[in-house]
Length: 190
Image (tube, rainbow, N blue to C red; front, side, top):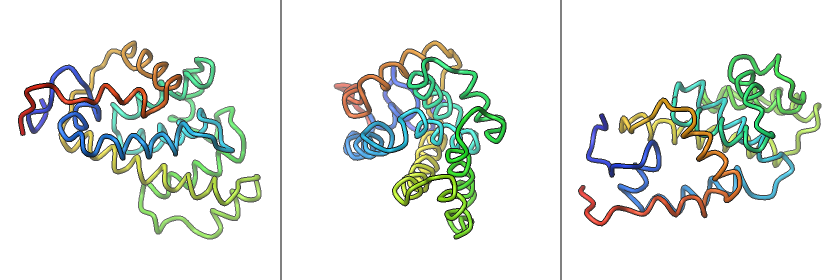
């Protein structure tokens, strides 16, 4: 049960954003830029970073949501998403993405854990400064989002089909368009 009176009918971050729609637009826009917009990393790779960080943080809603979005971008490959969460070093992903996931894991523990050697290693595998930057920002952003979702004890359904359906929608429409459902109910209570 949520710690505050969140709008019913929305789960996870969507309910928190509906409670405070003033934050929904900027958070959705940042997610759009980081995860869905044009980039040298595929949307699937960026969603895998978000999923991995969310799994490290133990945020069920975010790892399921972004895992479903990642799978939708990766031709439905839920097994790859599972492998990345369990042990990305053994997953069938590029060495560059593995190096970026190493950085993301260090950000999750604390930003100062990332070293010059981590960045150099990622560059050795072809990562650009933009890709390193955005990996750090995705990891930091998801630490915040995970704590937002879990800190309010938002509703986090266990039905994986719900996440798959929403994942396909966000993968297709992006965060800003799909975020239109964050609109607050008529009788919002604070």
